[in-house]
Amino acid sequence: MGALKALVFDVDGTLADTEMAHLAAFNQAFVEEGLDWRWDVAGYTKLLEISGGKERMMHHWKQVHPDMKDIDGGGLKDTIDRLHAMKTAAYEHAVQSGAVQLRPGVLALIQSAHAAGLSLAIATTTSPVNIAVLLRNAIGPDWKDLFAVIEDASTAPKKKPHPQVYTQTLSRLGLNGADCLAFEDSSNGLRAALSAGLPVIITPNSFTAHHDFSGSMQNLPDLGQVTVDQLRRWHSAV
Image (cartoon, rainbow, N blue to C red):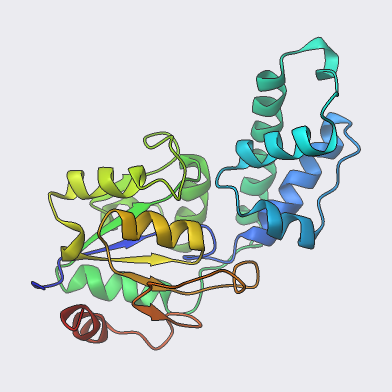
């Protein structure tokens, strides 16, 4: 394998432990909409097997209320869109209030990789708003300057484990999967990256620790002890 040229990061669960804040935001949106839904940690852990917030709500709706009439006479999609907008606003407020922090080692690795001349990219199925509020608060207003490519739910609508977000990231970087390392926390993310030809480093969290990570290059508790030199050694050994 040739030299390592780029690092590609998932966002939710990988860059930061975001899922408890997302869960609270979903539940807040349900209350605001007057729904009797309330997701608990166990149920949300199961729902995380489905990529995308709107997709999770649609799945829940069909599972729990298969004959439910559309709220206020509105279309099902309109209701999901409205709920998602409420949820996004609640999540944004939580992040701005300091409820979410980057995981250990993430910021140092991003900064050192950027200084070492590696290209950095984001490949996620979360929304642009969620990415921006998280990284603006964690890194600062110039956070986008660190990333050569950002692919998200607005540009890659096919959710992980579909590889679309990774294939588009590679196309925009002008690189092959073998030139890069992907950082993920879930089996869906792992499968998406592997399908696009990227070796993958996994940093699971409490919501994904039970996932099957077969095929990953490394499975680490976090990135706290990881250096660019270490990444290059792992990459060259693939």
